[in-house]
Structure formats: C-alpha cells, structure tokens
Length: 143
Image (cartoon, rainbow, N blue to C red; front, side, top):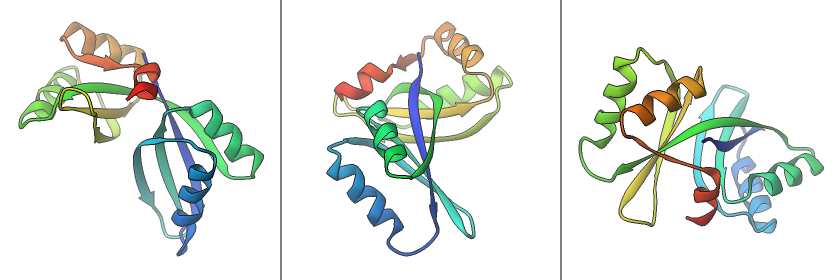
C-alpha cells in the first residue's frame, strides 16, 4: 500500500514554482500535497496528486525532469499527539525516516502523513501490526 510521489527538479530561480504549478493546473491535475526542498541551484518539488500517471506523462512530454517514488501514507487524527504515536512506533522499530510531510484530508478531520523510508515493505508491516491506518493511491485520488 503505497502512494506515488512525483518529484520535479527545477532551477532555483524566481517564477519556476509559478511555471510548474500553472502547468499542472493547465493539465487539470489536482494537487493533494506539496513539499519543496531547495539547494543553491536547484530545488526538488514533491507532489502527491490525484492522477500521478497523467502528471508524470505530461511532465515528461514537456521536458520537465521528474521521477516517481513510492512513499507511505498514514492517516492520523488531526489532534495533538497523533504524530507522536506514529513517530514512537517507527522509533521503537529503529526505522530511519528520510523525510516526511503532512496534509489535511477533507474526511473525518484526519491528517495524512507521508513518509519516505529505506524499506517500505518493512515499515508498512510495522505500521499495520501497530494498528496504523494506511492510505492507498486510490484513496488519494478520491480525497
């Protein structure tokens, strides 16, 4: 149970985020989450979208440098301490989280945490064993 995260590599210059988000809007792709990591010359903009196949195809057809990474989505209540519970589960299992970010779901006041880890299968099994509710790509499309 994974989510397709699309990473787009862009020059770290004024207007590049504008260009990219307008391109995505023109393709009628709905963003669910966005995370920006920058470096001196280039940035990585990570997206969770309703239709990752359409987005990756559109990006590649128009010469955007991009890739797809399988990440894990975990549904958590949007209240204090929810992330701490998931963090404790991962810490107790000695899991390294490379990065994470969150977005709010429209349903039932939940947040969705997105995790990039070394071993998706192992972490999914750990989370399931501890009662965490995982989110599929299909669910992302329907949010």
